[in-house]
Image (cartoon, rainbow, N blue to C red; front, side, top):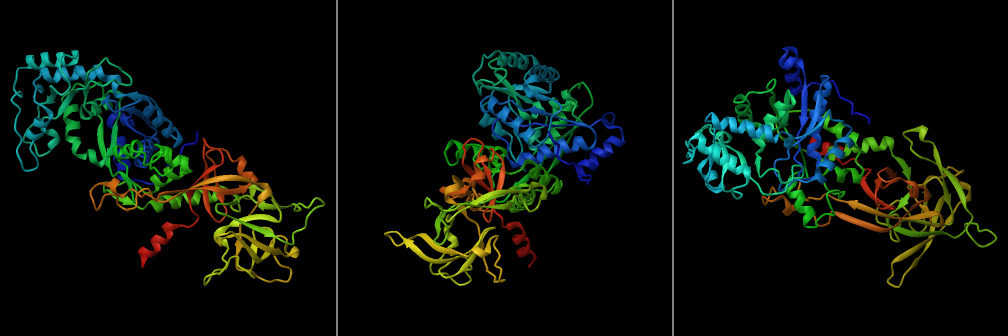
Length: 564
């Protein structure tokens, strides 16, 4: 497996880690972790976190582990665990070890008991809505629970019986005893344990109480020896609670430190797993790996190279200020990489028959077959050439012909000569129409002196068009994709991002034809359909290609507009 290049460029996280290393904090050791919850598939935002975690460890000769935050049995599944590990491997990273918060349930429970015994936690028998209301708000004082000062023995008894399954879900919970008047709302006696009746994907039914994220996270870091717990900015306000929990326990080793950075967000994109799951369950998309989805499995199916994603994440740097990046900026990185690596092939997505009326025929009346050597990738000479068959029975893109050409239309029309890519110059002479009057066939003549596409007399044409020989073509289907969300900032106008789902985000073309070599493209490989864009062969459906990105650099155009 090839690891992404790790640049030497500095950022505030690396500056902090470097300072710690130089000062001998944690013995100069660096260990990070990526801690996903297995309640859905990873999305493009997670790619930034993964890259940050692994790249930071790699830069200092350390190790990065994966730890699943599996503390909510109602939403987590083994399917998601396997998918997350596959995504991390696809991005090119290999964790030092794979852990689960559930590995530490006994230890976490014992530490919770210790807090109760020292008067730092208590069992609250109020319902969740009451507890939430009593917390107050910014500028609004909190109200202490009537159970806050109950004797430790009572809380220990209730807590043990909670674990034994004597109480219904929601009947009571364990809360830390911190400060109900704290300015930081997370310190207003947060819940540490709650009763959950769901079936856990690993521990099955062994537990009916589960630690909250805030109780499990820092302690799991400490158990594993994490030195720097790197997370996104939404956990900035959680850090005082992270520190309180660690400060009030006897840890097995050095104390980890939490550092926050800005998460990765894009225009026309939603990264809420809850909302993405709604798209799947409501049938708006075909699944988590739908090519329109911002999930890593969806982007992989669409043909985004993993190295382009990690390259983008590294190039944009790290800050503490949240910003929304243009999705076109990521697509520009993808396009540049595919331009250098993708093989060129010819395909016609919306075929229009082109018959060369003066093309020679053999003794049986069939079109003579010629062959042309065509470059596989002009960016890489080592990719060589391929042989493409040419006959008098062709298809071209329907938009490449106009019976009545508009101004500045330089492609094929009656009486106009154009170049067929790598083959001959041809001139349209007539059309064949169906009963509705639509053109279904274009008749043309070719100049046999222009083999290779150049005229010996030096005459010039203004258009070069791609084509496919019908007898030597293979049927294709092509998925063309627009933005899944029409608004640049989904939900900005209504408050609900799903209101901005684009109902016309996909067009499936079923009559496409391609040169024979396209039948040999393995699933997942991306090729350039000349003049049309980059297309990825579907890994499960032969003959189906998904357009990854077009040939036009939309990001460059956006930058030009912004510069004016």
